[in-house]
Length: 309
Length: 321
Image (cartoon, rainbow over all chains, first blue to last red):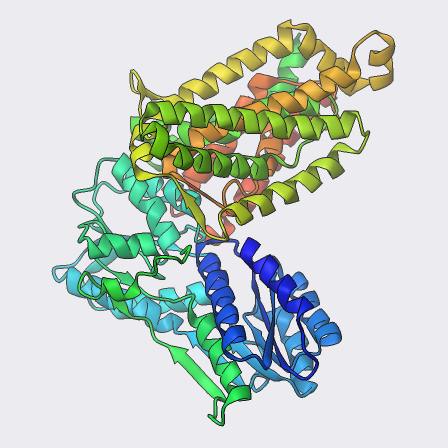
């Protein structure tokens, strides 16, 4: 955050008149994944600003949807942006605002959370939530060929979470895997810790946990250790937090694999938007980033030392 | 005497009902592990809520405690990580970390208290402001991510949450000690009586030679220190702090205090009632996790209903007075 603030201030001060300006609006770093998002957004903006002296960037972070609406309105009104890269805090409230920006003739890149109306954005960059759930589900099926008892920690009740869980359920359908319980861990360590403690009290036999997010996996792992059941239970998180990637690399039996949902997708979106202004390469359309399975063999490729996530 | 019992019986009745429902729903409910889990996880809110009882009794309010706990946790983790190269990853580093936590909490509480009493700004506004400040500071300290404790210190510190004496873990012991001391302070000391006097009528208290400014400031300082104590118990659990640490703790603490029979407008406080309130809130979440009766989407609604019911029972008791 501190880097981000100073960098934003510097950019504000050093705007040459003729340059193209790209506005980037993302949610504030309120949880681990968003922290990674902020890190990669800032790093990309810094790098591109150096690489293309003709491009200027405005980066804002919002802690709620209405703040994000104001941010975008301010960008248009006072910074005269030529393009907007936006990761909507929530789809509904941001749709009219982003639509107005598009109607003004600005280039619009929407990241990760789609708008509720089709055809507004020029470019859509997103992670693949159904594939996030499916890849995890397929791993459970292959790792528990005889079947087994699992529990699931879900995220904050939202479209993202629903798509993941539906795809996961579809992937394990027909196998002998029994889902004992599903509760919301809200992508939060503390909540997941208590939910997992209660799962452990409730079910004497659990083979594995799908935690669907690495913050939740962290809480679940701690609860399992506390209950002294480290030997029997393994946990699959998701999103590729670096501590988890390190444990996979070191072949921790409790953390066999992870499924990516890279916060670095904001870098993809900013880079592609910059290409729109600096090269003849066509970049309109959709860019969907599939979820990959991180295993001990490929873990090194997914480990980013400097990222906070 | 009979009336006072009626007044007090609401939250206790709610707690007993919850426990009976729990026993009926799941045989593991009364298991040692589950009881320990619920008590230990309630300890953070509980320790804070005891301090909050004094603040509310004296007619004040503190919305900043959740953010303050996150900030204290962050400062504490940074301090301990900083000391590892010089002091090593032993328990001495942890002790210094604990002192840092208490000092940071004391400082935070003193800032709230002095702004409220000396600068005469509404408690709601002051603590709403500091709530935002601490929440931003922890996000900034963590650079948007998560602050993690050095793994060596973590090992030395871990027993503070997970171990204890005779099978009772430290958070439970500390919560019990804080609650007992709080009950004594509220009932049997001049400080407790002065809090109630100020809360029921500040003017009259002033004319009665109560040092209003000092007592009110002290309630916030006390709460700040207890936030430090709660954080000391919290950090060893997951060894990390982030922007999502302690979110809504202030509301849980305030709700516990009110469920327990303390009046939100001040003038009357009951520390043991607060403890009952904390346990009610802790048990609801636990019960909902242990059963499949209710869709997890409705957890918040069930909690809301039980909070309101507990307070309604208590108000009806009072109406008969």
